[in-house]
Structures are given as C-alpha cells and as structure tokens.
Amino acid sequence: MPEDMNKRLKYNSEQRREYLNMTDRIGKNWLGIFEGRQEFYSADYWDLLTGIWRAGTPVRKTDATRMMKGLKSAQTAGKYVDAAVAHGILIEEENPKDARSRVVRLAPEIQGRLDGFFDLAVGELRRSHKILQSKGPLPEEP
Image (cartoon, rainbow, N blue to C red; front, side, top):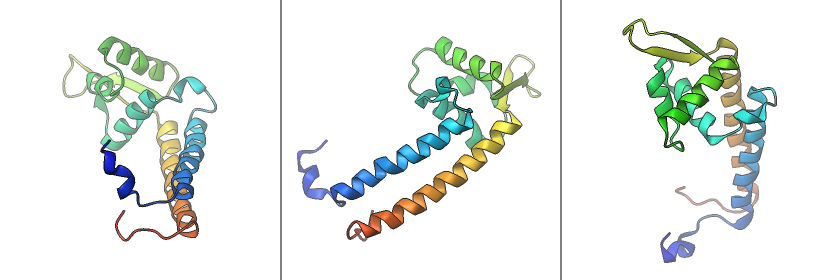
C-alpha cells in the first residue's frame, strides 16, 4: 500500500467497521445455504459457486476447477468440485457439446438458495449504506 494512503481515507473508523459488520451478516447467510455444513464455508466454494451462478449455464468441469483462484492444484480443485457433487450442491452431467468432457451446474435447490442469498446480500448492502450515512458524511465519490 502506498504510504500516503492515510491521506486519502474517505471514511471514518465507524464506517469502515460497518463494512465488517455487513460482511459478517452476509457470511451468516452464506453458511445458511449449506444448512450449517461448515466445510463449504470457504473462499474456494465462494469462488466456485458464484462463478457457476454468474455463468448462468452449466460449465465444463475443468473450467469450474479454474474458478477457485486460491487453489494452485487442479487435483485439489477437482476434489472440491467432486465434494460439491457428492453433497448434492452441484450436478455433474455429460457435456452435450463434447462427449470427452463433463459439465457441472448448480443443483436446483442450491440455485434457489443462491438467488435468495443474493437478494439478502443486496438488502444488507442497502442497510449498510443507511448505517454509513448515519455515522458521518459520505464522500461524493466512493
């Protein structure tokens, strides 16, 4: 970080703390997607599932493994995908465009839970914005 970063701070400590409060609230909602199964509460599953959700369509299994930016090993990433399939979070199917590969997609129930999660997350964002306004002036530009 640049040394002059403190000179460019735009928010006060209470406003920055609200960011952490918001991420805590959102994190609790994320865990709810998995009915409390904490093994899925990780940045790797966040990357995987939000990547597939963003795609909006089944993705090749090898592409899904690349979505997990924090994992350097394709083999380890494959184990994460396989675990998600084994727990019914993802569905693995033959690739209709290429018989040599497989695709994965979100299980319908997980798709619905993620849709609901993102609705709650946007609500938390809006709530936090109101809290930020109450804790001090906000800069014109974020």
